Image (tube, rainbow, N blue to C red; front, side, top):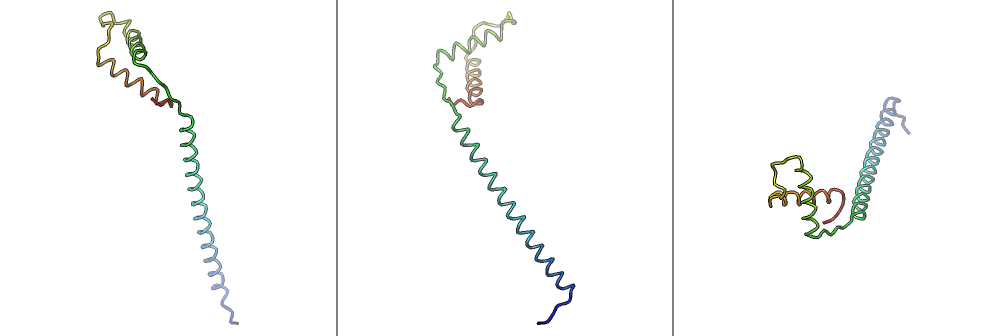
Length: 106
């Protein structure tokens, strides 16, 4: 068996160590990605499980919007105490968006 010079043996050993380090790094990245994917799935499942359904009837929504409108305009003496259809529609949309933002399904 022929012996190789010491420098050549060290070079081969260093190359093997580098390859091993690269493989470990790739394995760690894959493991981290899998962990992140599992965490995202768990968060999605929790959000779906914690979702609550709200049923809002029309007259109650209209009363809420009307009361909110009067409260917002009490300091403005020139404002009409009856909201316009545009105001009602805008406030209804905002109400639904606010409820959905806190997890209610409308």
